[in-house]
Length: 192
Image (tube, rainbow, N blue to C red; front, side, top):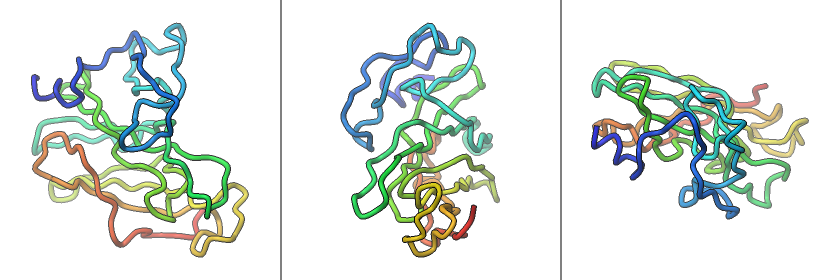
């Protein structure tokens, strides 16, 4: 359990409070505790919560038999700022990530997938799925590449959405902390 607890450098996640310490600085890999804090009275008491208590749809839960750990991804209502060369309007959600040995005690990993790394997911990553093939995990996610209704100004993004795939950067890491988006992305574009 020590390794799991040290994943975040803090105690295991709890269900009855929202951690303090959010900042108003832009969200990104160096600032993952950003965004508004939810009042403690509005937080669920028996559900996993993200760091800002703005957790949305669960995505791609799976059990990793190689490391005997459960992984849960979720829409996290934080996102990287959208470059000015793209239509402005919203940023995020991205995909948060939590790990558990027993589905009772959870540790938060860093954000697994951020929006804005590529044109095909510049605005957000919506609800997707996970699969394990030959012992290796893969995440499948819809990327939001335009506003709604779409502007039609981004090639490959006629309807506003694409689909991408990511896999662990270091499959030997038991916590599958870092994820890499495929060079073949988007695996499907012009979708809605």
